[in-house]
Length: 265
Image (cartoon, rainbow, N blue to C red; front, side, top):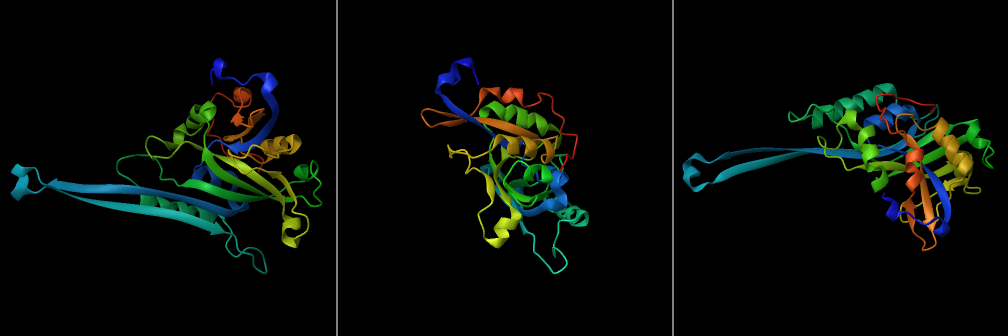
C-alpha cells in the first residue's frame, strides 16, 4: 500500500487484530492442527484433456477433444462416541486422506504435491492461557477459521510463505488466508448457557469485529503455527471502512519459513 493511499491517523477509530493463517492448504492445516480438528471443509480438482486431429478430416482442421475432471471434496465433522470421537482425524486417517488426494489429483504436468483448498475448519483447543484472558470457566475452546481473499498488502507475503507448496502457479489455488471468525468456550456451547463467544467477526464486510487484544495475541503466540500464523491489524475509519492496516509489515516476518511446521498448538 503506498503512502498516498494511507488512512490519515485522525480518521482511524480503532485497530483490531485478527489471528490468521497465511495459507489455505489442507496439508498445512493438517500439519498444524491434526487431531485437534473437529470440522473441516476443503476441495480441489484437476482437469485433463485428450485430443487429436481427425485423420479423415485433417485437411479441414477438424479435431476431437475429450476432457476429464477429477474432484475431491471433504466435509468432515467429528462424531462423538461413548469412549471419545468415533472418527477422529488420527495420523493414520490423515495419511489415508492425503494418499487418496494424491491418487485422484496427481498430474503429470507438475511435480507439486496434490493439495486441497480449505474453505473453513474448526479446531478444539484446551489452553489455560486463553482461559486466563477471558471470562471462561473452562479452558476448552472451539476456534473457527474461514477462507477469505488475501488483501493486497499481504498477497505477496502469502505467496512467499507457500512457495515450497507451489499452490498458485502449479495447482491453481487462489491467494487466500484463513482468518479466525470465532472463539467459543465449548462447555457453554454444549449446555446452551451464555453463548461463550469471546471473539467474533463475520469477515471482511463486517466493520465491527470483536477481537480482544490479549486473547488475539495469545492465540497467535500459543495456537497458530509459527510457519503461517500472524495477527492482521484491521483499522476501522470514520467512513466505516474496514481495511488491512499499513503496519502489517510490522507483524509479518518478511522471510518465508514455511518449511518449519508445528507450533504450540
